[in-house]
Amino acid sequence: MDILAIIFMIAGLFFLIVAAIGVVRLPDVFSRSHAVSLTDSLGAFLMLIGIALHEGLDTNTLKILVVLALLYILNPVIAHATIRAALRSGLKPWKKKTS
Amino acid sequence: MALFGFWILFSASFELIHLGLGLVFSFAVAWLNSGHSPFIPRFRLWLRIFLYFPWLFYEIIRSSLHLSKLILHPELPIDPHLISVNSKLRHHAAVVLLGNSITLTPGTITAEVERNNLIVHAIDKVSGGDVVSKHIDL
Amino acid sequence: MTTFLFFVLVLLVILIGVYLYRVLQGPTIFDRVLGLNGISTKAIILLIVMGVYFDRVDMFIDISTGYALINLVGALAVAKYLEEKGHS
Image (cartoon, rainbow over all chains, first blue to last red; front, side, top):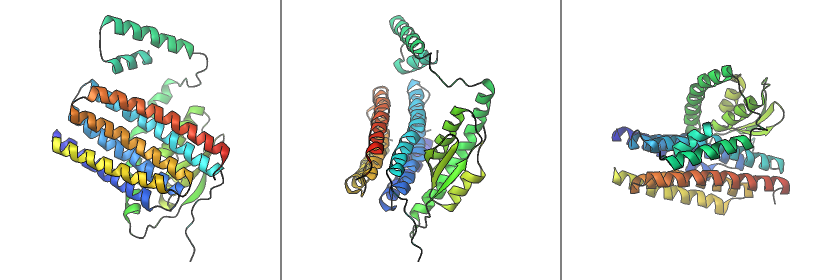
């Protein structure tokens, strides 16, 4: 069981690292928000599933699943609010230079 | 009732005083909010939502692998653009669920919601095409 | 397992540092808000891993749930304010 948990957590860490690289590399706000959404959806999911497997069946596992559902509902709301504010205040999305 | 279940889950103790307090407070909150709750789904909608979640999860895994391949590519071959999605959903909660799952999928983000017309920012041609073609209907 | 959890903790702190670079350096103010959102998600995961590391999961999970809810309210307030004000 521990081996499975470690595999899940390593996969989650991989996605978190990729998202951090993307946050530094990508050119504008809209693209960076894609990277942040990557860490929210899959990285947090794999990490928390790994921890729940390590804990075993308990009330703590149920609480971890509640936190996970909360993240899945609340994080798109935050990302959508930020992006809508950026779009309404007149920021133009980054275009590839045609050359 | 659902609130009472959450109380039991969070306090995780089964003594009499805790259960009584939880019962009183959960019914008080439910009574306070009972006037203006717009989300009263029917039973068939719940059944289709349970069929919908595994498909959404498969879609999340596929597109996040695609996005991480894009980020780790040395030349950064992204092509962001805005597309407009017109959905035929009538129920209010269904539009909310559609926008939420579009934002949850990596690579696309809902930027603006009219009544049932969504403006979506996509990072790539592939991610944008997914939203247009595999457009869900509850 | 304990060594692996310690490794995970150190890596998460390093990732928070990477996001902090984006918060401090960001060209527009929306970059900073986005970086703070990423930091909050990392902090929730960090709290739960810390709970497993110290064998006090029941306490740390409640803290992280409260952190997630407070983060939602704060981020929505900042986004609403910026939407009214415009970027500058």
